[in-house]
Length: 361
Image 1 (cartoon, rainbow, N blue to C red):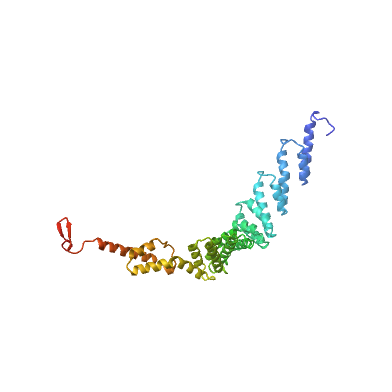
Image 2 (image 1 turned 135 degrees about the vertical axis):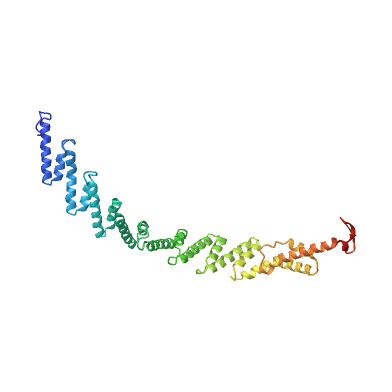
């Protein structure tokens, strides 16, 4: 036919007819690939060429399905969407392929098929199972991020919650081991009572306090150490930091503030003695003078002495000074009242007329 000029009489029609016949014969002989080549030479609208082309894919898909070659069936059915019952057959092939992958423990391949199947049959249930098994494999291989992602998709299934906690605990441990305590801490917090998560929170804070101390932030470090109850030597670290802070503060001339830091340092070295010495230097004389003035009835003097003194945040030894000041003020006011009040039997003017204090009372 190639030697006959196109357009000669009915040459084109005869050519198409021969090609069409050859294609049909190939299909009868199950030579679908060759049939497709022939059909590709025909116009789309020549007889039922369009359907035959699809059949050259659809029919091999059926054969592959019958031979349980589900991977091939899926690939072929996928090429003819909407043709005949292709969509239904594709789902069947996918489902069988997924089952096959599950039996072979190729869970990722099974997951891919079940995800594409959506709500077909019990695909959603099987997808959950496949994800769980694949997550277990990833966990064994220490792919914690991948395992966590899959377990999160099936949370509530079997022991997924415990496994998620295990993964998150491991991730937090890894972070803490490289000094990423700020990132590890919220993970431990979320784990709540899992394993020793609460103790690990203390470990995070301990590292944070150490970092603050290294940066020279003694107050923040001391406060954080002090907040870590029952963990290693945190309380000793707190006392040490407070003591160092007291020394530095005293060197700046801030005596009272230094004394308060010495107090917080507890029994570390001579902290208690240093605090007491500072407080005595500040309050001992004024306290003695005020007490002596009170004993001598010099309430105004006692009040003046204490009123000029800062009585906030007093140590226990001098904690009664505000009460003495208050008593001095009361006694002074009482004396003033006695001095200005009319004496008994003295005359006073009242709305009812003039009379003595005794009469008025």
